Length: 126
Picture 1 (cartoon, one colour):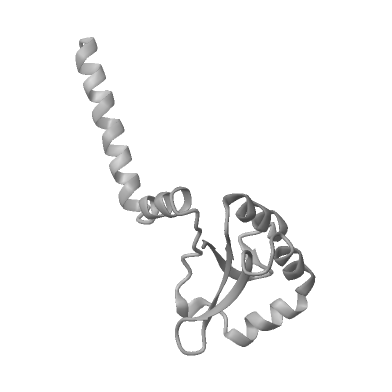
Picture 2 (cartoon, rainbow, N blue to C red):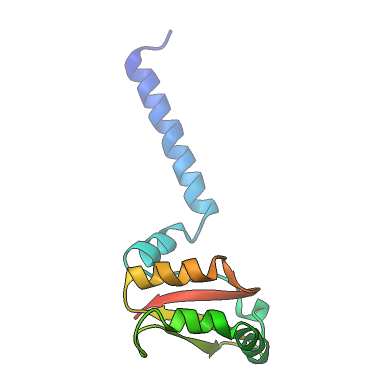
């Protein structure tokens, strides 16, 4: 029978091994933690080559302009908004920006999904 000290040391070693493995299998975890809780941002982590074109994003925005108006109505002009950011030739990213964490929560509630009607989006606190 193992002594209590040895069982605790083995348990601690197994726990440390599991945490280490998790860190290596989830390379974005630290960055996501800092980005989300310190900077109050969220990024989609979709490679630029997999993102839609600027024209496709504009079509989705036009089809759902009622949702865009609800997002923009959260705060006065210049505090909450969106932009289409080109990344690679023929591809772009959709970014919603805001001035407070409460506004971010409202945007997320209005969109209600990890994509804006199929378009991956990022959130930036400015």
